Image (cartoon, rainbow, N blue to C red; front, top):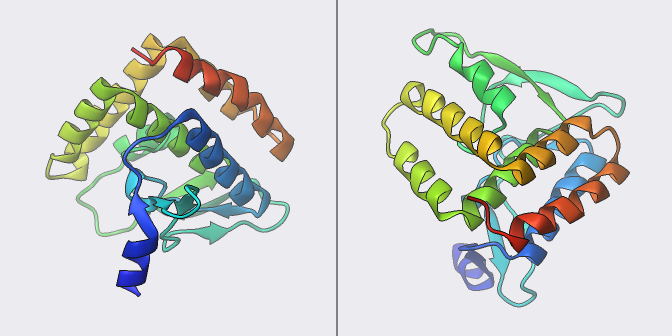
Length: 193
């Protein structure tokens, strides 16, 4: 299976505007299906060699919401690097030397915030360098405050990113995903600072 996988899919090294829109489409599909992946990160995004479509892999931490639920409390799992500010802020308040597994209330837009942060990571070299440096730290306890600071700085310095976050925070239904398309395009018209 690994050889088939390796021959058909390759790691995504960059994101074009079209691929970013496809990533948002994937997240919209999950949203519509009441699935929260919880592990959206570059290593879980692959490029299909034949079709050039993006594929999301590794649903090991994914869960399904009940049809009328907007969120669900679960033990924290998945990557933290690309998570939204609210999640990182919550994690910063956790005692990391305890034996219990803390829970977080994951909402339907959790993956969308992660996807936006991946897009920023893929198109901005300075964010990429800083995140790679943070990933080199040995403990989650060390990483969280640095990630919080990084994403807060990106939000404060980049109005286009901040605007997209505001749209995501107001998102209440699947059709609202279309409101992300033009602001997303603006990120590519002028690569973020």
